[in-house]
Image 1 (cartoon, helix red, strand yellow):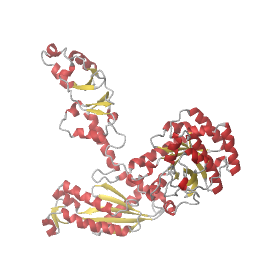
Image 2 (tube, rainbow, N blue to C red):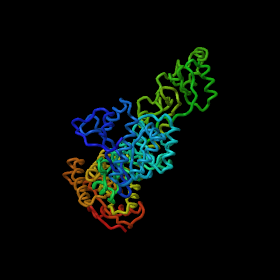
Image 3 (spheres, rainbow, N blue to C red):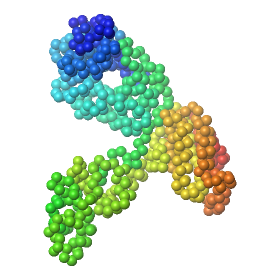
Image 4 (cartoon, rainbow, N blue to C red):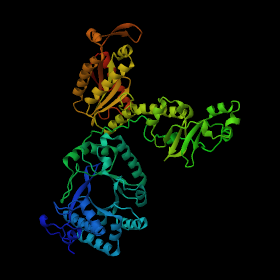
Length: 596
């Protein structure tokens, strides 16, 4: 059968896959895949299309029809052969990426098709090392051994192996481990809106670690926005694909689109989103579970007494039904106090231990996050802190949690979270600030570090109270945030009324002036009318002396950092803090000084 596709009138295009194959109406488009570190084209993915405007124009409809007609494998193999022909004729740069399922690949590797494929490669001048096979997972791989043997055969010729759409819900980490691909293409869900979702950022970081472990490189799919590309570049993702880089076309691409080239050539670094959950990722009730024994609900008070004597370190015990689901919780101290009363054993010794137990204990699932558990600390029923609570998995008993553990875990988590995000403003804290400065220094670009501090804030806080003081700090955070470019400028909250802004925006000076002017205007609205009329307040100074203090204003100490001028994050922070001290001393809104 000839592989030359004749031109057809789309008005009379075939509506079955069989007809499309027989009349050679399938079309191949090519979308570039970019190397993000050097802004070059690494290869092209071959994408099949049916007749323009027809019901089978796009892949989903085309392959669904192929499944209905029992032609899935034949359709895939046909598309692969067409891709090889058209790619060779177009002489496109980079490698050819061909999508194929495990079953179609095994068919293509049968001896007859294998020889045909090798013959076509020779005919079109394609070397096997020019080709990357993208293994799609539109079905479960049932015969992993046959697949692995086929992939070994391809690797011996130099063919690259890629795992397609990893993370789309059908992908398998086990398959990644089994086939050891050279490339793993990450589903577009994780790329879309990446700069605004810290969870997706963390996912990419985890995938990069996996890729290093398995000896693979990542390809991020679905890149459509410049800031998505910037974040992926800065994370160290090797390759990318998406409309921002290049759209599918029959002629492919010789270079990336201008918008993508501009991002990849820019010295600006991305402002990475921060996880701001107080509990931190991965902290759940399961981490608090003590592997404590439990008792059946048929247990008597006499048996319970003997149990507590044997388990001296146990402060409570869960009571379970026949399905191992909790029905009650017995507090050791309360039970022992009852047992010590006269005649308790005679009257209740053989009664079930649930008689005086707490039959409505707090029961939490193992996956309950620390944020939800924190509400226990402020609930009206404080028995939970004394007795503890029961932890289950899928309704069945897992272990016990204690109030002491909960208080300690919440305290530790909040202390750790405060290092990463300020609990008052939810802005990044000291650790992310230092990390971002480090990334700026490593990028080799110039940037501006601004240290913000409130003038006469302590007297305001002392006079009006901490609640209104917190409102003043939140106001400062809102004003600074509204005058920063969220994609280029990093705003962090050091603590108290101290903030740091790391500018990459060229118009940083006007932004600083606007921040000071706007804050000074809005801050007056937080003072009482009497104070506004007087221009300030009477309050004690730091030495305990009562004196007049003007209304609160904002000072910004600014230092411009040139490449190679400073080398450590702490040096940048010190230089900015020094500029801030000059700004406060000079009672000047914005004070700019050179780095030492």
